[in-house]
Every structure is written in structure tokens, then in C-alpha cells.
Image 1 (tube, one colour):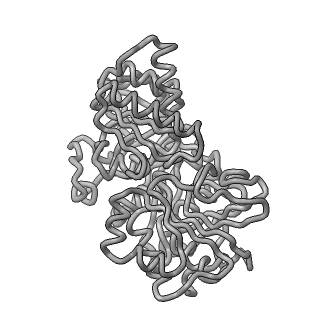
Image 2 (spheres, helix red, strand yellow):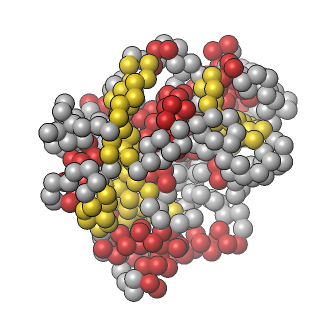
Image 3 (cartoon, one colour):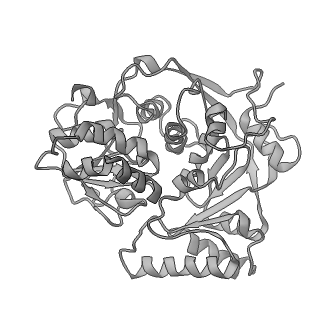
Amino acid sequence: MGETLSEKIISHAANKTARVRDLVVVDVGTVMAHDSTGPAAIKVMKNELKTERVVAPERVALFVDHVAPPANVASAEAQKTLRAFAAEQGIEHFYDWGAGICHQLLIQERLVRPGEIVVGADSHTTTAGAIGAFGTGMGSTDTAMVFATGQTWLKVPETLRIQVHGQFTDRMVTAKDLALKVAQTLGVDGATYMTVEYHGVGWMSISQRMTLCNMTTEVGAKAGLVPPDAVVRAGGFAVPAWLTVDGDAVYARTVDVDAEALVPQVAMPNEVDNVSDVAGVGEVPVDVVFLGTCTNGRLDDLRAAAGILRGKHIHPRVRMIVVPASRQVLQQAVSEGVLSDLLAAGATLGTPGCGPCIGRHLGVLGAGEVCVSTANRNFSGRMGSPQARVYLASPETAAASALAGLITDPRGV
């Protein structure tokens, strides 16, 4: 009987055969934390585990991205703690404010590798599955244990296969729309402690795959994976010969999705699975448009929005903020003229990082305000006031909505 990708990766890291529901101890290839979670992990490692040194500093990555630059004294102190720890421990993979979002940088800077276990003190560590790594989020206590030992324990998850048929037939339909359609189909707990494995997406870029794997967290998944292929190799990643799809692998469930029939989607307040065709939402006035995050803040996302906004101006009621996922993305957007197009259209630029995604700075929403966001969560209070409403959409839908001042299907722009 064949193995799923999760079984193969976990078996390799455990140095023994591991099947669904087995409990195993695995070697961790990369462990990461950021300014919101890292200080707590450091405290646990030193005060509770009584460990003064990380076991493998070369496998640790630390990021200042969630409230960067800091918005208050508490944030500033947390970031000081992270800087001091990186220097004390000799951690070379330290990225201070302005470098970008942890999930973006893990792949952009080649800090993760296909076939390894990636543990992060952040739920969207699943993004690493875009290049064939088993990325999973853990709490600060478990992350501290990885700091101290280089290992963690896992229960091998079942795998839910998403079989994508065909390709998008309209350039305004994107991986974000596919991820939202999957969330609608599965529900927010439809893949709880499972791996969501996407098949039939070999035509997608690494950036698009990052969007898919990032959003698997929103259906309860332990990990999200896309089988690594020539696209991943072309991106500079070495794919192990053993990391292949077995034709006789056993999946808990297979869900078929027709990419050719897909149209632009939007997740309405206050759940990620509360999804509708954009065209069916009706006239919803928009106050804020947020383009960015680990889900959709990459160069192709900024290019797509700029293509819609070029030579035009956003609606006078709308405030639009663009926060690139990394400094490299920002630099490329500047060199290509993409940023000029966005700014000329009336957008405002934020420091590369998480920006207003978690409602702590750079655009907190007030009561009654409506935001179209390219992020991954729209929970009540996620971006500020619990009385604000957040709609999740693609960069194309976000840009079209910024122009019209209403939630708008980008196919009509």
C-alpha cells in the first residue's frame, strides 16, 4: 500500500515507517517564531525547560513582522527580547522589521526545503507546503521544546485530497478564489487535524500554491501540501527522489473542484467558509481595501491590482493600504513601476510585514466600517472593532472594489 506525502515526510523525519494515527517523534528541519510568539517560547525554554541554548541555531529562524515597526511599548520590548535572543544564541536567520512576513521569507530566502518538517509558532506555517514541506503551526510551549531539542512529536494525520480539474478560464479568477471555494465546500472544521493535499495544480506558480496551502489552516488542517514538481525545482529547491505521489496512497476523502467553472469568490463576515460568488453579494459599500499579507502580498498580487488600477483612481470614500509581503517584493514592485501605479491610484504604502491583518496597527477598523482584505481571516474583531465587517477576496476583487467603492466582480472592470 502506498503512502501519502505526509506519511512519507513524517516517516523520513522519524527514521521509521509512520502510518496514519501513529504517534512519532520527528527531527525538525526548521523552527520559526516571530515577535508575537517568540518571547513566550524563549521564556518557556529558559524558565520551564531550564535550557539555556538552542540545540541547533542554524535551524532556527526569527522574524519581527507582526507589529513592525512596533505600535506600543509592549511590542517594542517583545522585539528587543527577540533581537537579544538571536544575538545570544548565534541565530543567523534573524529578520528585523521591514524584511517581510515570516511565511513569505521562509520560502523566498530558501530557509525551508521540500520533504522536511517545518514547525512554526504561527498557525499559517502550513504555507511551507507550497514547496513540499510539512509545515505546521504549534504553540509557544511546543516551539520552545523544538528550540531545546530539535525534535517534536506528531500524530500522523489523515489526508484529504483536493483534486482540481482543468484550469481557470478567466484571468480574474485566482488561487485565492479556489481556496475560498474549498473553504465553502469543507467548512471551517472540515479538515480538522488532516493534511489537505492539492492535486492537479501543477500549472500553478509557487506563489499561487502558497495561497492554497496558507488557507488550509482555515479549514482546520494540520498541514497543506502540493506535490513538488518541476515548478518547485525551477524555483531553486532540491526535491528528494523519494518525495513522489504514490498511485495507491490511501486518502480519507477526495473532493473534486472544477477550476474551469470557478468565478471570483468572497468570504463574508464573520467566517471564512461564509463564501459567495462576488457577483451575488449585492451592493456593499467599502471603506477600506487592504492588499497584502502572507496570503496575497506577493509581487504577482501587487501586479494584478496595479493592472486594474493603472491610470485610474480609487473611489473617494475608499482608503486603500498596500503592504508588500517582503522588502524584496517592495523593491521589485518599485523597479517595475507597479508601486507607482498603485500610489498614483490613491493607495497608501505600509512597511513590509503583516500590517493591519491582526488589528494591532497600520489600519485598525472602527465600528461599522467595511474592509475588503486579501488576508486569510475575517473573524469578528480580527482587524479592530467587533462591529467592523471584513470581506476576504483576491487582489483582483480588492482592486475592483477600491475603484467602485462597492464590492465588485473584477471581471466587469
